Figure (cartoon, rainbow, N blue to C red):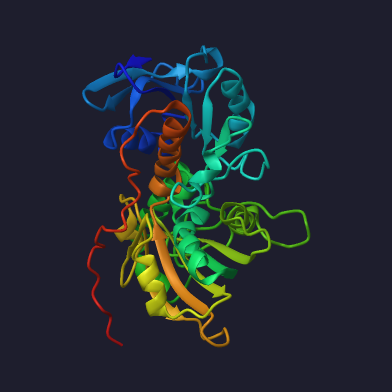
Length: 379
């Protein structure tokens, strides 16, 4: 544990040594979260690791084994350690007096656990019955700021989305699979794939279920045993959107695809509304939405390492009668806003609502930011 300031809240990060945990630590420091005492926790395997906290000063903090840790005195615990770990430890932290912000899927559909995107439904944090708050799935997270403001103005009734999800969403092993497969293809002459998909002797997949280099894989998660033939990743968009937007009857369908991109997910979205809406109407509304930046051609490289969701390619959906449908494309850094940043934003809201501690303005409210320029493509 490290004493950072004489005021603020006592914060713990569980899963501090992982890929998302690293980003969480960075964001807590970058955005000057009001930390009083700070603790990093992980499994016994990572315990004893020394991590740096670069807040007001550079401070070394030794990672604690959560199984041996004294959980008393923690005000807010931010989890990024997997569903099984969260199911076990979130109630224990809560019983010890902490509010838990969990990044796994373990608690998202629990009726007594708020599922929150900070710009969309912060009012759901007024009452936290189990002292546990859930962070949505990273793809759901990216489209909620846009869908919230469009729903408020035009009445959202139906969503169809195809995701283009980066390998970092599958963890560090997914990143290494893409890196190793790409190098293998380059070494053997990657352009042979122009004429023969089996021309490269790729190594066996280690995380993504099929070769991901120079490929796309339309399968993420596990098939749900309910006859739908959807994966659990695909059902998350529908179930989580309904809960976050308080639209229990929202119609939604999703196809989740893994693509050879390291970080930042893309989403192709077709949305149908109760009221007429044109692309210009949508752009006017989206320009004022917190956490959203308009871009002519939003790409994952544009989003990687930044906070907002970028939205562009906004068109009238020609498959919907009249002017009640839009087609658009959204991209967002799945490690930042898709996981770590939203968790920190939730913690900021909890600090203010439940501890009376003033925090900096929510950092994802970047609608005034300008998107990197993108050239118009000529046909």
